[in-house]
Image 1 (cartoon, rainbow, N blue to C red):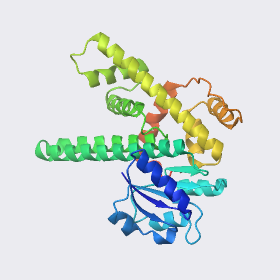
Image 2: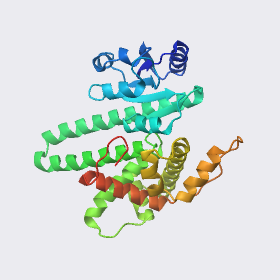
Image 3: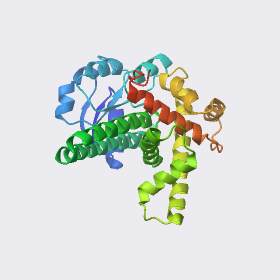
Length: 315
């Protein structure tokens, strides 16, 4: 993974470079002390995957720079700043940044965030490779029918990938299970008018993964394991939105997704725990898995049908 760091504080640039290199996160291929020194064609030439950029810089600040790069830089952006103004943080998210990290820098937070962004890039690359392979297979075998199947597959993957990213769980192990559930629900909808039970969904997903020769015991084990992975991913998403709401209650992603995917009392309780000054572990939380999966499917349907415009998390 290739990084570019833009910050007017040389010490911050040095710390970030050291963290990236010490943790084997990738390679820092360039630095700048001001946004005016960054151009899209240069980032493209350097094959930059992740841009780390400070919000406040003397010449062209981080937000102005992101606007400047919108049509020329296709990588991911993480903003780092000591600014806590909700309006500025919200504007940064609306322009498409992946994460906003507050200074002073916390090494663990930096490592966690950069690994999540790396996972997102790797997932997108993997999906792209699969799509290209399917496209070549389609062209060789069943042109007409396969083209339709590929278009369906592509739209499901793209909408699912987008939602996983919006929900903050694209790097979680349960993300793959949720994608498998989404594929099943789209295909099952064509044959069934009623919404299937979670048991039927998980059983069918397990059978698809293990194959028709799998024993009943193996299917049962995989079903339970898949449920647990998805449950952990949902809890992670809940924590993600609680953290986002604690930082900026008016953040468009928080406003749109938090109450739609979760029972808001659970979100509110988690936010209060995060705001508590005492360093105490978060309490166990119950999540409504059926609601989450149902909303996940409905959101994916709306996105595929083009009934909602999506840009930087605002709809």
